[in-house]
Each structure stands twice: as structure tokens, then as C-alpha cells.
Length: 109
Image (cartoon, rainbow, N blue to C red; front, top):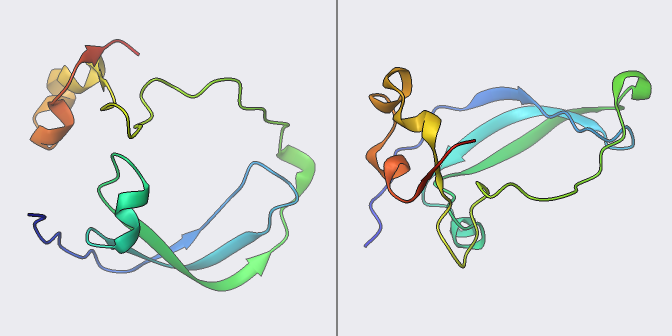
């Protein structure tokens, strides 16, 4: 049984893309731990939706060309749980992370 996740207050956001052809929207974000889209994203704990208010063009001046070469092994996949990076065991992080982030195989990153 899935427990109800609390809804966070709404927040103002600006979304920025690494592609100059993609517009830059401003809007209000909401975070939902019970959204129907969660099942489509392995490992996701919340879905963030943005109600778009303004859209601006991106200035290509500082946007560099990007090419995905390989996905990180830390990206969750449906076939297996994502490994836990070693930094999550460090004293400065371990005491503030939810217990579920510590479950699984640990790896350096």
C-alpha cells in the first residue's frame, strides 16, 4: 500500500535547457507524491508539475553543445534498483537523508 505523501507549497520556478532552441518558461511548480505519472519513472518519489506563466527565448551565447554518451549507473532503471553513491554514507549527509536512500548496493562516484 502506498502511503500518502505530503504536498509541498507551490514555488515559483524558471526552467532552463541546455539547448538554445528550447524556450525558457517561468511558472509555478507543485510537487506531488501521489501523482499517477510516478509509475512511469522508476525510482521517482515525486512528480513536479509546472503551470507555465511566461515563456522567453534562450540566448544561445552561453549554451554549449551537449551529447549524451552514456547514462550514469546511478540513474534509476525499472530492471534494477539504482546503486547508492558512497557520499550518502558520509557523516555530513547520512543523518539528513531518508532511510530509503541508503538501501541497496553502495558505490563510489
